[in-house]
Length: 131
Image 1: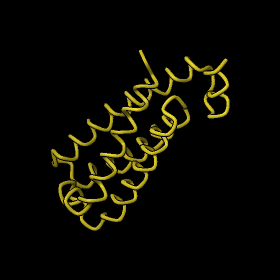
Image 2 (image 1 turned 60 degrees about the vertical axis):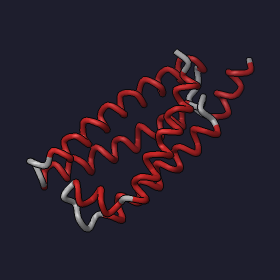
Image 3 (image 1 turned 180 degrees about the vertical axis):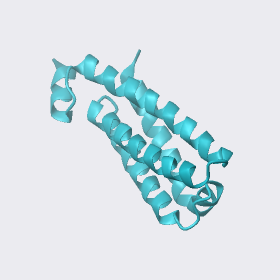
């Protein structure tokens, strides 16, 4: 598997998701029965945009993908609270399933980059790729 291409694809995905969260924060909060959480949705959108830019700039750096995994953990925690507050909301459960799937892809990419470069951090990854 070409983990660099996967990292680049995750960057594009992050930018699209982040833009959607920034532009439709009110609608997303309403769908999740989390009115009043629009600022949090926008903050998560900003985080996604930053993750996407980092991945487009350096798609073969495992740290950038591990940052997405950390963001996924925050998303899952927030959606867990939403599920507790609105246990019958199908949109919340759909979002949880979607983020869980994205987390699995992110973990696959991060671990693959760790193995293929032998390093997690950007400076080390660059040396390993040119060695």
